[in-house]
Image 1 (spheres, helix red, strand yellow):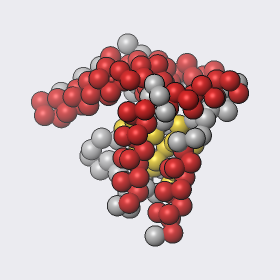
Image 2: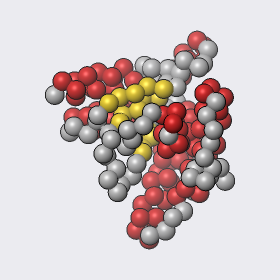
Image 3: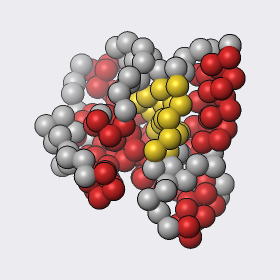
Length: 176
């Protein structure tokens, strides 16, 4: 129970965590954007993170680049490995972000959220979810090359190379 209380506090703090790689003005804009331009996905992402925590599905909460990673090391078990809603990234991984392309990829969706704002859920979120469900039902493997995913990969590659010198694994996370 103590861990859940600590995680709940960190999830709430995550609403206000901004990217230390940005200037003060850009960080202020990032925060302002969460409560205006990105408010639908910020609210849904926060609620989803808190609900997962309430049922004990959160092991830890990490922050990087203004994103809040809500981590469960055993969440996916054959299911979806990551969900990005606003600056909240619910993920299944025991690794740190800078060494895991899935976690970097999900950050790419966070960048999409910032750019698309109020349109994000309809232009990125729902099409991505629909494509993922389609792949599972029809036993196809098109999700990695779906436009929402390759765009997230390009965003992540650029961001993590610029700020952390990370190399990109295009074999697992294609750019086109």
